[in-house]
Image 1 (cartoon, helix red, strand yellow):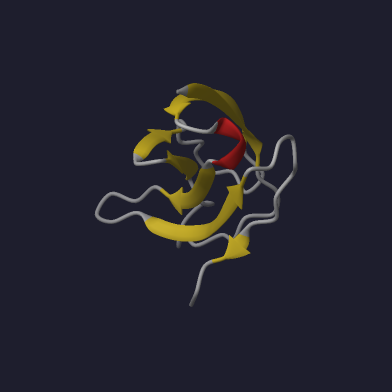
Image 2 (cartoon, rainbow, N blue to C red):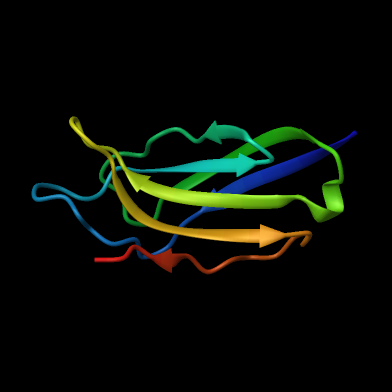
Length: 100
């Protein structure tokens, strides 16, 4: 058993999916069945979170990390994009846009 530390730093140029104002983004990080969520940043298409999460994993160098970026809504949150990484340390990732 090992520990994997994941830092969610920021997002740039997110899609504005709100009718009024701008998107209210947050990120869900999934690792081996465990999930953590950043705080929601209101009215921001270039949010900076600087959130750090620690996960207990079997093999830190081979763990699959999934990132889902969503826009907070009252009824149902909307997907802005996602990406996934496996066994990579310290890389910046490009977000895959949501499917229309």
